[in-house]
Image (cartoon, rainbow, N blue to C red; front, side, top):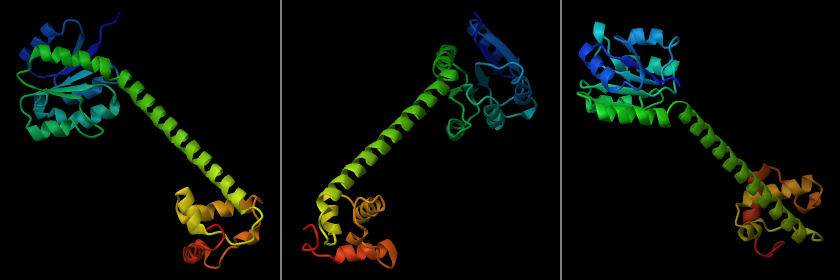
Length: 229
């Protein structure tokens, strides 16, 4: 079985030797600069990236973090540096092009190994699957809510039709709204749909000049004696 590949972006030889000793269970590839690391990403896709901040040639690892995330958005990046202020660490861990973890130098190698194990288990492809599953759950909830609203609307319209059949009086919009616990405009829309479908006569609730706002005003001014009280 192939070992997980870790790209180590580190210019310090002694620090890299410590990584080699501690991370023998992984395949390590090294880049001394972030620009060199970017060049290698399309050719050798790592499972995890360990990124130092202060690098050779005056490069700063955080400056290259957005480009790395653009190339490999779901590959977890672990920043290891002793040169970052707290605000810089927080900034690196936020936003769509963020690192997944940030460790301080001198790094605890046991903590680093635990972090790598967690990243391999919970990030990468596993993270993509969880996000898709969450999206599917969200879509199912949206569909179920839509179906529930549609069912409620049809049930309400059926009851309104049953109550108004055989009457010629203009319905009391406010009374219907209170009974069904909805806004007056919802009752007006129900009446329009029932009339459009031919389930109620048009003369029962004729359109007013001025549109729905006029209808609501008329409905608001109607007393309990009108229609269904």
